[in-house]
Length: 242
Image (cartoon, rainbow, N blue to C red):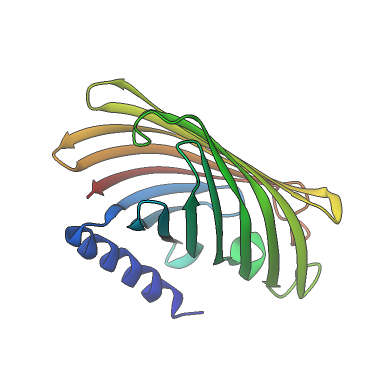
């Protein structure tokens, strides 16, 4: 999987470049302080791109890569790449489907391949940029290849997915955003995952903004015996929106 950082970087750079051709793109570069199963100072990159090829059809891509070293040794590394197709039914309802792959050796898996199917509902559509609230519900199929020492070498699971995200403009040039994701295993109710991230965004100039965020992930049943249940990540990033 050494190719993964280059794939994420390619997605990051291509997203930033093709945005000039009429696509919507958000790209982040920043530093992070990680804790839980990994403690380090890290560098992270993220990108998200959306292309509407008709008024009702949208193709989205997102990717991230985080690398941390402590004492000259790699102490944190995680990444993801995904692709999603969305079909807009009306102002409030959207259907979506798409695959993705992610990896986090320090959380116990080399790679996790997944496929999503579900729907999105805008509670408050507003401008869908800085003032909105929406929720998603759906099904996720997951197949994991785990690290040596994990409870199982590999496993597949059927997951229910509930996601809610909101954003609010506090004042001119300042807005807050937060999301919460709940992922219960349908075949093992004790295996629960929660993810959340509140963030504060401040416009610096033009399309450039400063983002302060705290991301948390809770796993009720860690994949490796002795691993902590909660991982967290503080990030300070520069964000370019096109």
